[in-house]
Image 1 (cartoon, rainbow, N blue to C red):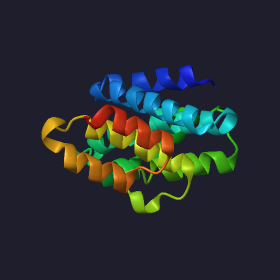
Image 2: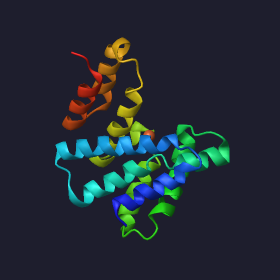
Image 3: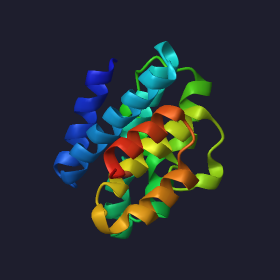
Length: 166
Ligand SMILES: [Fe+2]
């Protein structure tokens, strides 16, 4: 299964339930790809991070159905099983699947970040949340948030380029 197939499975999963999440997932993927390019992450590692970016919020669907809430903890709880279902038939090793599920299952919990793959997902996803801030009124807050949360050079550069006014 290639990335495009996973994207189309993600799209059809969200279409009937939370269609607004499709664009979010694609934006997070785009951010992650920019950061990976800048960091020189290629090949299998890049593929796996892309898969996580595409599916990181997939738990929202069952969270909404089961609990009537898409809040972070429910998403994290429901995400790994939903991702596994989509990735059935994908040639992933047990370790790779475990890593994908770990990151999806903890992606709202920064204290669980334990590697550059998880860090890139965190940075790519957070950027979408920060884009919603009133840019002009929030410069100080945005600067502090970038300082606290962004660790990769390419993530810092991307966040500053998009969020910080000179
Ligand atoms: Fe997200």
